[in-house]
Amino acid sequence: MPPADGGVPDYFAINVQFTSGTGQTVTIGNVHDRGSCSPTKGGWYYDVDPNTGATPRTINICPAACS
Image 1 (tube, helix red, strand yellow):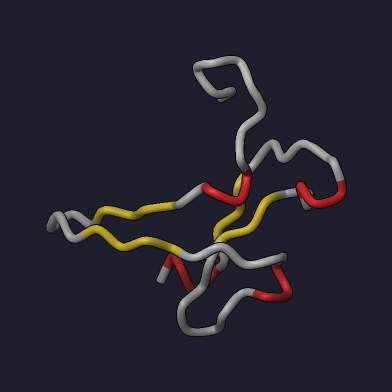
Image 2: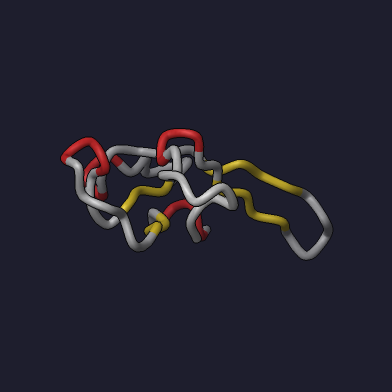
C-alpha cells in the first residue's frame, strides 16, 4: 500500500510483527534474501531488492520464523 501522502514508501523502515494466539508480539527482523535466513530466528525478505530500484511486491517469511 502506498503511503497516505502519495510518496514512495521507505522500504528500509518496514517492520514485520507476529502476534501469537496468547497475545505475545514478536518483531521479525529483515534479512537480505532467502539465503540470509537465520536457521534459528528466521527473518523476512522482499521478493526483489529495493536497492536495485525495483519495487517490492511481496514480503517473504523465512521458514524458521514460522516455527
